[in-house]
Length: 484
Image (cartoon, rainbow, N blue to C red; front, side, top):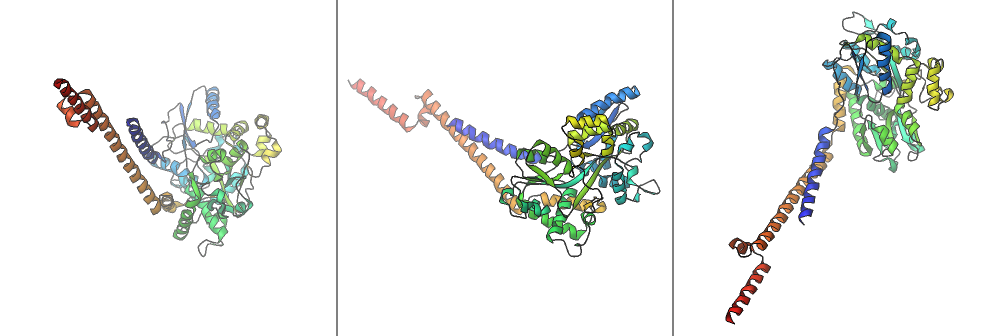
């Protein structure tokens, strides 16, 4: 009984500690690890977004080229918003960062990144020129502090990876009706019972917002007057009316979700703990190569086409090494190694890849033919598709968007009541466990005292009824002996 009491107490305390720990540590992320120095190159990038051997190889290349050594200090962020916060605070000395296009727009408008000297990049011709054309068609006349003129985004970044935002799904559980629902699959619009609690949403307001507004467009739920906006205009419209409408559909979605994720979706889809995920095309391609039975699509109504690229912050300390690293990444062999490792579509053009024998050997080593790789429409969608819109910075509305997203993810009243009852239940169980433990301990102590000193006054005072009877019988026996 004592062991049972201790076990109950331990289990209750462990459970309470686990819950408290889970609440306390959710949302903790990586931070920049070190301050730049002359022989250090500080890189700040998305998680799982480079072949680790590339940074090691660059250190060797830098030494061979310059005669000096360099140490790459590499740190990661989860979302553009996390990265923007770090750069806007200006507390870290960072040499290279890899934001998305709308975040680059914001960094330009804040005067936080440098205009690039492209004459230092001998491999820049390998980058697909269509990327610059697409970006410049959207981001024109950006006002940059201190320049006295409007700037083009192409002068401030080197493209790295690109792709689309769409739906990664498990073909064993998703029906044709689910696919026809478009973004509605994220709301289980077709009523597929297999999907409830098996749907993941990106924990990124920008990506989630794309899905929400296009879901409203599909289902006729857009506020009056917004129905005829193009996909690109719609995903970049965030006035009070649209913000309120998006918040409502986000909250309606919570009942069918397994949760929100940034990088964990790949693992969940691999392991089969989720059947649907709002995913970036590169992540989808990576998982589809690893596991059979998964597929990806961009809904018919359209979606987001995105571009990530490298920029040099204004406070960079090792600009020379930063330029060398950028040029190194534009080599077809290095770019192919990266895209094979992470699954994303490189900004290096298909033509540049196919003209490089080393790059094509890497492709063959990964069991791809040129035709299947470069002909894959998931990997290489049509950039000119009018229904694929590019995100722009929300500007002054960004804080409102983030506040809305936090409201969506926070527990509603019903959830709060459930959590309250859970906590009270744990505390109650803990109290009962403690009480049982000490009661049992007290009983064990009483027995030991009674048996150890049966003739003492204290033993007599606390003796059990059975012990008292035994003592009385013993005294009667002694009296009989004396009488005899």
